Image (cartoon, rainbow, N blue to C red; front, side, top):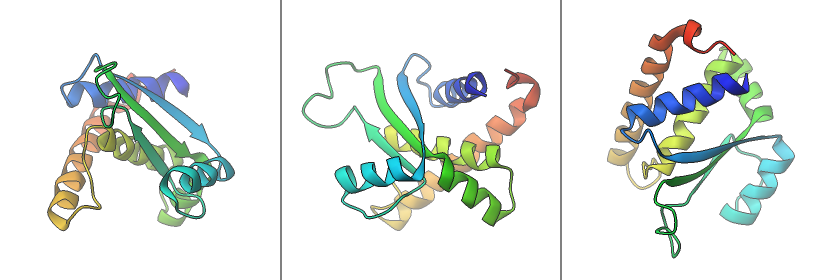
Length: 139
């Protein structure tokens, strides 16, 4: 499964014209993501994904190839997949795409137009991942 996640992340980076960029993907439970959500975003409780971009702030120029971290709660992903009636891997892929897009500066909170742009790019990347098919994602 971890190799499949790496391949999918690389496919996303390739599609975003950034094949040499680096990021970390951290899979946590609801308790861990709730603690991060409180400490860094000042929001109470768990969420599905949090991105920590390294291309922003005082030290953004230290390593231009380092995009940042994507933290995904597997607990929340499982609950959301069950609620939506989709496979956990499909929901995980959605969260992975969403988190990586945040590292590239996409935002859905700023305004409705930005949200539309991010949603369209998300759809585009998810279609790409599905087209690559299960044969490419084998561990």
